[in-house]
Length: 420
Ligand SMILES: [Zn+2]
Ligand SMILES: [Zn+2]
Image (cartoon, rainbow, N blue to C red; front, side, top):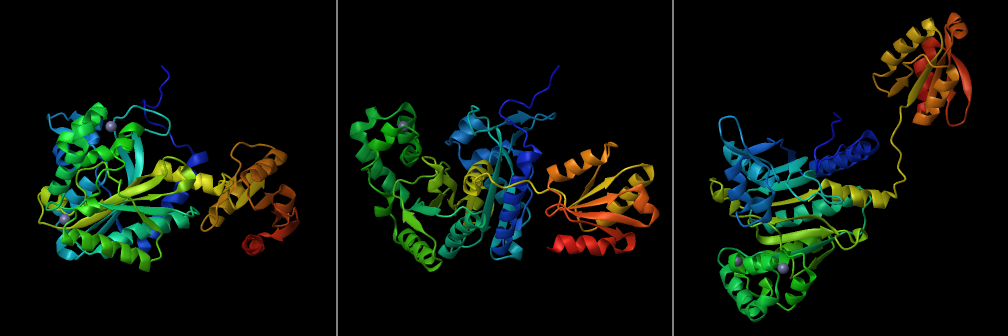
């Protein structure tokens, strides 16, 4: 039996994962600067939470959830996204009592049963932010600014936010009617999925992947013309904040997000360098969800995104030229006594430097080659003869300069070389 990773999953091996570490660190640093604190959610939740939180009509809930019964017959689902679990935790732990606005971030794997295809996995990673507790359009703008800042920090320049409104409970019914009225005469030209969406939630038709459906929607009325006064003011105010923050944006009347819970602001941030599918993240306001999931009425706004897409953009920007960071120091040794000395030196140096050494008794030459291959900056050469004199050699791997150093001056000599 040869075991393989399950269909739709993959291993992220060290040759690749060091880049993931960089991206995750950039995410965490940027999020900390914006005041978003880490939350670690359970991998699975009660199925009902997602059905209710994400919406029964969405593709995620209808076709893509990893749902199973545990040994007591309880229906559980592997988390397909992060918002429902975050809101559940917010309510469960009364997080709203200790802070006016609760700002949380996550970076973790999600699970959706999709047909595996290029770049799509059943276990995939998402990063996300949720700001729960404020009605203010400044929070919407702050989250959008975060996205652009994160991308800039990763060298992804030129991203643009696209914004639309999803309206609210009081203004969407009129819009849905206007939309149905406009689309009715040509309804039979839409795909079967769209006909279904027409009945349940016609705005969802903007999510269709078929070019022909999207063409039919091109002159559909915009929700921006049907917004109530509060929603219109909110939308305009978000744009003013973005102007003030110098965040590049466009208003996109066709933008719709594939989840049912959005109200008011919805947005995506696009990076044109990725071609046709250029969205790097998407999010919006969900002012009704906390109440929907059993909490007090509490406004909220959030964003989430696939880490895999972010990696694509990051790699295309860095030109794939980066190199996995190697050890700072490689210790070469020959002979039993020298090997023990090398292990002792490594133990001391590892207090604040990265150190690698040979564990296979290879020749000095092979060890030097390994030091070069790993990209070590300094090699320490421990030879039996030098040890007799209480010394080792220190070699600058860049210049090839090599000097003999007394053991009690070794730290100094190494730090001197590494400081350059
Ligand atoms: Zn409204
Ligand atoms: Zn369609």
